Image 1 (spheres, rainbow, N blue to C red):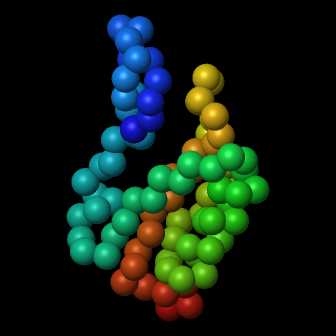
Image 2: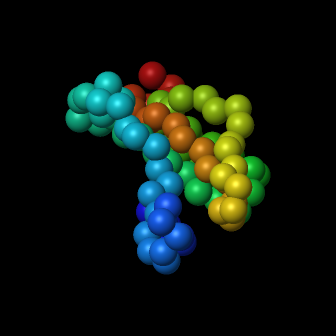
Amino acid sequence: MSSGRTRSGREGVVRVMDVIHEVYVSEPGLVVVDIAAADDQTAFAFHAALAALWAITTVERTSRTPGHPGVRLRCYLDMRRSPRS
């Protein structure tokens, strides 16, 4: 959620996260991670820090939403497995 203008033009909370499909959280230990950062470098650095701890999907790009600051990145993490398993 983010503060901003709603579709009706009123000031309020605006939903900015995408829907999470059930398959990505179908078992304990599976996590959907939405990263919001000032720039690509910061988002990818945080992704790399997560990848050092757990098995995680690879990512190639971030996304930007016009009128919103920063970048967004979504990845899927499996806490049951280390990156070396």
